[in-house]
Image (cartoon, rainbow, N blue to C red):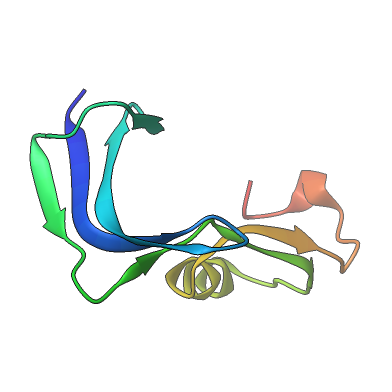
Length: 89
């Protein structure tokens, strides 16, 4: 699998923002490596953990796409739809 390296970005760990550094991602996980197949210059940007919205009312796939674009990696649907009949599954 290719390794993606983000350079020159500040990293927010949930409590503090570190000075700009390098983060490598390999197989979907953080890697010890410092170089990669793809390099993204994160100058002026801050990396942060995925955001969670624990109370949503998602009605369609477009709303899920908008949530992902806004940085949400987890949304919890609260409308109590019958998930076995959901077109999103």
